Image (cartoon, rainbow, N blue to C red):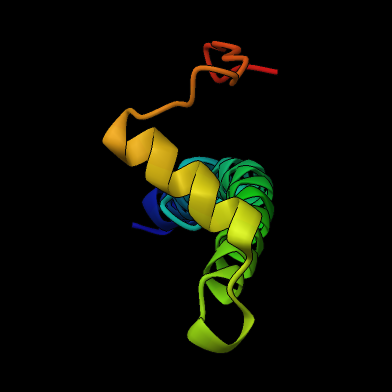
Length: 99
């Protein structure tokens, strides 16, 4: 039994080290998962910055439409766009929306 115990203890220790080492790298919260989460975080921060910029542009346009500070040019532009109206002296420039 003494020889078997000398063999069994190192095998169990090797198994435990291998188990925790594998899960430390490949597990749900391991090194590779943390790296992937870091990349996703960077992508989401970029998306968030883009959305914040769009939000501020929309908020600015909304502020121009408030009754106390309505912009006549913006109102005219939106009315012509939504009603498909133009004056015979207007020059119409069509764009595909891309810059």
